[in-house]
Image (cartoon, rainbow, N blue to C red; front, top):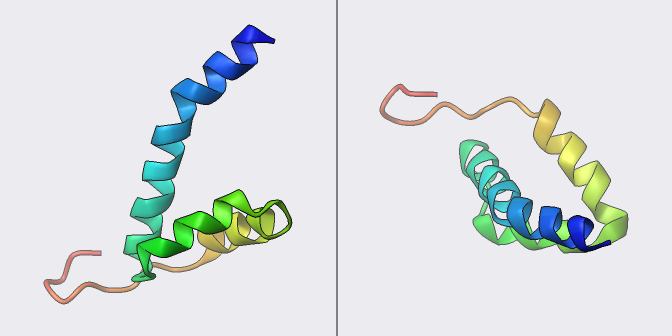
Length: 62
């Protein structure tokens, strides 16, 4: 049981950082990160982030 909490504590911030980076890649407001805390909406939202195409940035980078 202790190891579950330890793993959650170690991976929580990196997972949120990757999700925020993906949101910025899609040019979606970073406030959508709070969708991760709504259990019913979390899975479809993550699937959307996985399949959505990146938006082209103004300086030519993707």
